[in-house]
Length: 134
Image (cartoon, rainbow, N blue to C red; front, side, top):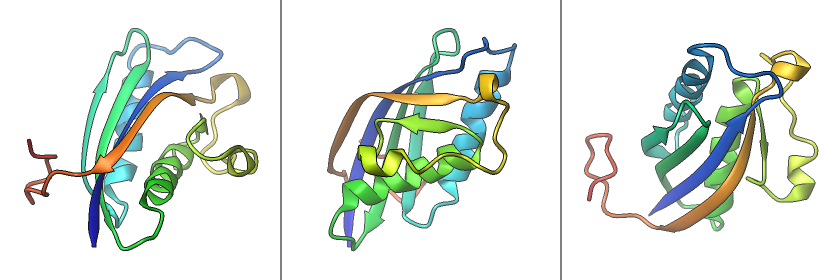
């Protein structure tokens, strides 16, 4: 089983400005869902609630031949299950058909996670305490 680290930087935004606390609550909900994934071993995040700039670092363990794709799918499922959409996380052919259906916010309020930067590599050994280790 391989252990890998995926780090993605997003701009999390929507057409109507966020109300006080809405962005933080939305990001927390996505991370709670991400922790429920079977392949995710640890998640760390930083978010600037003024700009929506969010960095997600996650460690995944899998036997899969394409661990990057699997890690992106797990992150995408967490985002979509919270009623948001993501842009640039998966190949265009997959992104186009993956729209949130359940829990979706109204059109102008639908959060959009736009990828700014992605980094993927072999992870440091898992410490087993839910953190990414150093």
